[in-house]
Length: 389
Image 1 (cartoon, rainbow, N blue to C red):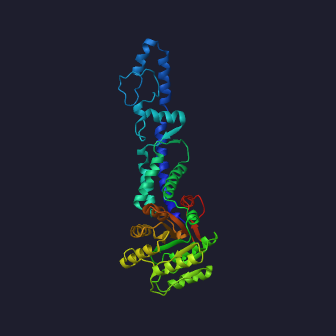
Image 2 (cartoon, rainbow, N blue to C red; image 1 turned 90 degrees about the vertical axis):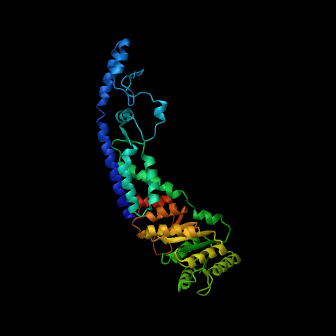
């Protein structure tokens, strides 16, 4: 799982490590200046008071100062001024960098130092199926974290790169997080959940997995066979219903899917059931008639949650479909199937950002228990190789 993402991440880590090593090498050349500055200061202290001003004029001027400037106190590192405090985070004086190197054994990362590593990171993200605007946002987050930070000479730069990327991913994935368990617990019963998506992405199987997930938490569930368009769809849901011991509300093939779901909700109310999980026909966003039908279903049934289902391995195609579905019938969250076969990992990152709606579950296998409630930490741990897939 996500092996391609981990592989591509190595390019970013190597680029950052190389840049820091180069910066350290350059900075170490400044180390010799320490003894020179000490000698100048020592000589100045030994002079009579009347001669000190002359010594100060001859000493090297700070960055930005004219050769005639006369500091009141000879110092290698002059006191900070208001102007210095207000300078951009990405700009650091020669003396600030020298002080950091000499006394703290650290180098300061500047924006110009990160150009190559950030390019490598953006390319790695895009090659891992992370959509361009999402990759740009992640790069901004990582750069913001790194610019102006001091890094100990000899520190593990790979760990520095990973931690910065980890923080950026967690920030992005947590932005629209929804706790599915808390939502079901607090919502008035029966909770109506409608599943939408394109054909062949595992929508019906995902419904069965969610049903099993809810049953394990002692909720009672009703299934609604709202896919009246595809031959065999009703039978497929019935097979799952029989396996799980659940009531399946159905009509004849070709019937009105909104009527099926309405009847399922009425059955749930009459029998004190907690959750209605409603299947719908798979459809492409380009099918105008089926999308109009979807809007009607939403208007009639008023679902509490509208969940979009697609395959993680579809990459940017899944991201684009999620965006277009969300524009047509605003979704409340997503389920990504076949995550266990996804080498890139970009879909899970991108869909949440592009739609502004959370990923709720990840399908990681074929059996009913192979469904993971989405947690940002769970995904990031596996993307970064910090946990077993």
